[in-house]
Amino acid sequence: MAAVTLPTAAGTLAPFTLSPAADFAPAPGPFSRIAFSAAHVVADPLADVDPWLEPAVDWDATIAYREYLWSMGLGVAEAMDTAQRGMGLDWAGAQELIRRSLAASRAVPGSRIACGCGTDHLAPDPRLTVDDVIRAYEQQIEFIEGEGGELILMASRALAACAASPDDYARVYDRLLGQVKAPVIIHWLGDMFDPALAGYWGSDDLDAAMETCLGIIAANAGRVDGIKISLLDKDKEIAMRRRLPAGVRMYTGDDFNYAELIAGDDAGYSDALLGIFDAIAPAASAALDALTKGDEARFHAILAPTVPLSRHIFRAPTRFYKTGVVFMAYLNGLQDHFVMVGGQQSTRSLPHLAELFRLADAAGLLRDPDLAAARMTAVLAVHGVAG
Image (cartoon, rainbow, N blue to C red):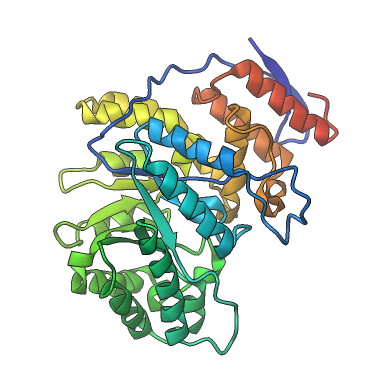
């Protein structure tokens, strides 16, 4: 089997022999759970730009990755945090991404895509008002609906900065939900993913914030498809799930506890909108297929080894998880390089990437061990480490 010498947490080097790849037998769906993968973008490494200042996207490779996800029965959550929205991908780039992805989806029977709608084109300014936030959201809503896309109402940094109370959140969301053409997914992103979203819904106390959010959903239930929460707190998610109005879905965004939340309990289950599904798509597809067929034991057997990998990729500072997602795509030959928009490939250490490699191997997720070993060796060499 393929082998590579990897850095350890102790600052030493140790040999590592890879295991055979797992045969997950991914399925095209449909599944008994709705499952979106928040998808990453593939950077263009040949573009002559300053990466910290100007995004450069390889559009063909980026769309090919979405086609790969659709082939496994997964929906695509487009232009979200995983696509480095607000961390390398600006609104202009997001518009092009949304336009291209929606066009590609029309050629894939049964594909589903929902698009992130936010306020990231709104320039930071201490004089911003709630009305400014509403107008910014409306601009993005108009664009996405004009392209024929489903909406995911993303949390707004600008709203978090200028809202004076929970009433301001209710005012914004009531206004937006009152005018959308079709039910939307609301996205509650915790501050572990984006520190600028601390105190969202008008409180640092999660229970109080949840009350505000639930009140908004209850007042607009007919225009809400579901709520996606990314708090990495399974108990909060379950508590909120049990209080949602009939017909409103809970989409788990918990990249630590997704398996048990998707499986559910006697009182219900969560659908999924997960960044980790980008990195573990074959396993996610096969597990969801097993669950759909009533084989919950196999569902858990497939996903259990992926959880340590996900927890490592999403460990604090959680906002840097995108680096691990893109690294997985590189190791698996789904893109030709380990370069990210914004230069974000530099946000994780070499020992972090080495542990990711070990955990991906343990989960059977390195689909061509020889290729993965060669690519890991190349990354080590760039860092001056003989692999």
